[in-house]
Image (tube, rainbow, N blue to C red; front, top):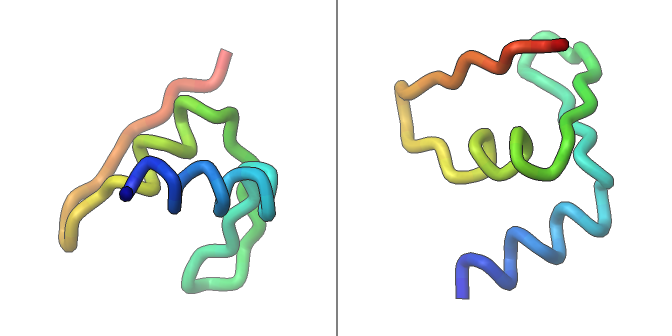
Length: 49
């Protein structure tokens, strides 16, 4: 069920996220998945190549 919600949100927003400081971020599908499944007070470090 949660995977369906993830697929819908990724297809709607295309990996775009606006943070709490209103800054725009664009993620690939795997990176977006890590952010999508975060719990409260967790963080993810994404390495850009």
